[in-house]
Amino acid sequence: MYNVGDVSEMTGLSIKTLHYYEKLGLLKPKREPRNGYRIYEDHDLLKLQEIMILKKMGFTLTEVKQFYQQQDIDNTENRKEQVWSTAIKRQIDTLSREEERINKLKYLLQSMLYAIEATGEVNHDHFETFIKELTRVNKDDKYHYRSKTFTDKEISQLPSGDPNDPSIMKWATLLRVIRQNIGEHPNSSKSQKLAKRIIDYANKMFHGDEQLADKYWDSIRPTTDGKEKLYGMDVKVMEYIDKIVTRYLQEKEESSYD
Image (tube, rainbow, N blue to C red):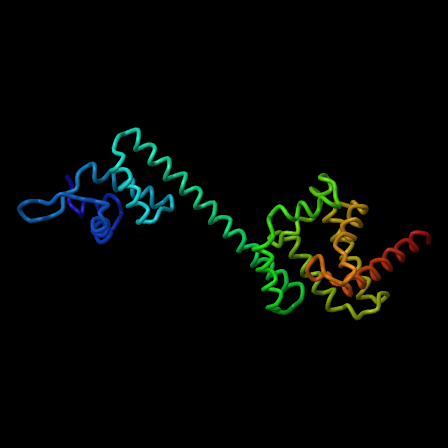
């Protein structure tokens, strides 16, 4: 048998915590008849170990209490195993839902970060759009949208489009520079340096597959009414990129004949 100090030392839990567990009804130590001191037995330590395990598994104290209440109702050994299995499965489901929520939130924050990096400004209207899209769009929608244009093999080779991808953030940085220089003449030194950066980026992203790169480029062009299909890639940006890249490739082809 152990006193509260012994249990505290063995488990690393504070005496205050042990008293709190008792208050919640999770622990029920006996009392020394002479002085009323708490006395813990081996079965109390085993239960305390279980409580600590459940806590590490992510259960709240309220859920732990409910767990033991259910276990008290189903007090045979076989039922005890079933109670544990049911509780663990329920916790897995809870964590899966929380993981999905966190992943959505992370995607939203990365999308906002992409928008700021691409435009150099904080646009609350765009942020509200991202939030609406996040709640509306199913995670499989992107695949179904792409499958209308690309084969499965091509889809596996396409840029992810996920703002969590570092390469997408690199494009956001490049896009910001493009937007800043959109008034430059396509033949200028700045424009041609930008064109080279764009082509180098595309070659890396599409592994040198120019046909797939061109097909993807056409797929993200704004609609006939000017609506963007990809954030930041509006009509003016697309036209500027087309001009400077076309000019860069023409010069490269001409120089190859010299």
